[in-house]
Image (cartoon, rainbow, N blue to C red; front, side, top):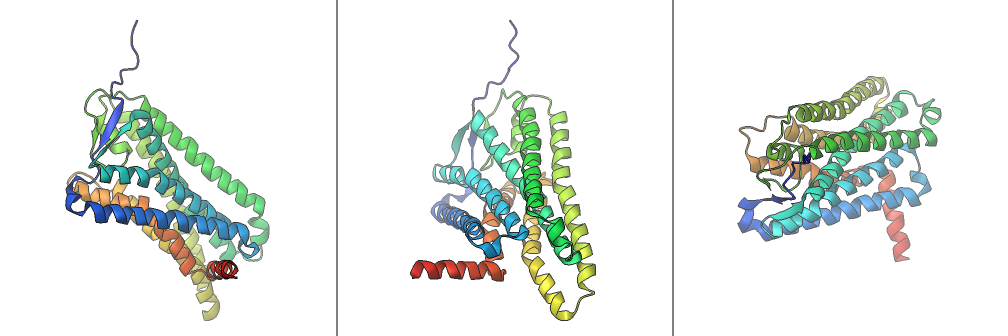
Length: 309
């Protein structure tokens, strides 16, 4: 009887940040603080949009979806990273490692797609204001969000299944603080060419297609805004500034980590770049939207006034 499953590795050992021994406690506290701020900030956004009728519009609906994606990303990465940092590395089961990779890939894909949907929403609001109410209905918002999550979960499931089918019969040490596709492929003793090609193709589609949509949307937005008066121009740009800031931060770190050549790069630098989009961006997103958005600030003010009454 032939054995078809040649996978002998049952767990992986993640090294984390081995060269930060002297800064372990400050780094640990920084990660813990970032996680608390990220989760509480995004939960606050979700609560405010759900409890305030003034915020029940497409822009804030998609903002809650972005908050859900950010919570998924940080909760998937940070608790285990805290365990790894405190213990100078940590083990993770084979299934746990693949589950973490799947959740991370889903949250990254959903964030890319969501940012493009939010750009399209701003395009309709600024370039087609008279038809905005009929084009971006509640049903349309729900359908767009459902399609976005469906694409994210199904596409990344295909990638995860491909990685599971590889054989792991040698080393099990991952020099990172989470399970990602690149270190998993490096540890496999199978031919990974087609898996790498699949990951690159699907990853490029999910990364660059939304980015192209964002750039095209803002090209039309800029052309439309330039024809407005100075007052209306400032108002239009102010509604887009938060989204543009988030897009720049997220795509800048994501492209820098995944699409630039890794060979020759400092592995420590790569880890810190990964920290930016897995920990820092989800923490900063609700801060950016709350500080630059008048409606969110008013909702926060009303909420705390009710609490103190």
